[in-house]
Image 1 (tube, rainbow, N blue to C red):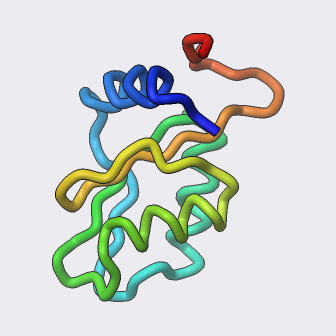
Image 2 (cartoon, helix red, strand yellow; image 1 turned 90 degrees about the vertical axis):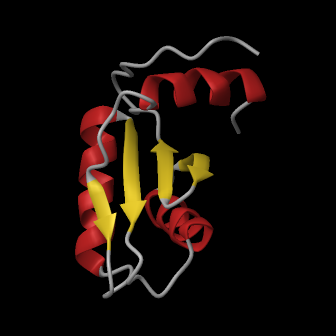
Image 3 (tube, one colour; image 1 turned 45 degrees about the horizontal axis):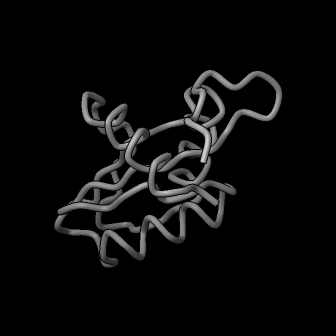
Length: 98
């Protein structure tokens, strides 16, 4: 569980990132879940976008993806969401202490 200080830190890091996961009219397909899982393993922090044609809301997509890949939702704003999952062996992002 992330603290508000850690969320703020991660939001700052995600600010300069481009969205690498795009959810469209097909919704949360298995390929989207796999792509998200692979991206989180490689980067720990990713930004995604939900297109207007998607059947779900941004919050629904972010929550479903986070649950499917074992990540945490850092934020949702507009049609954008940010997910974080610490790398189990060699974490790259050092979160501030509580």
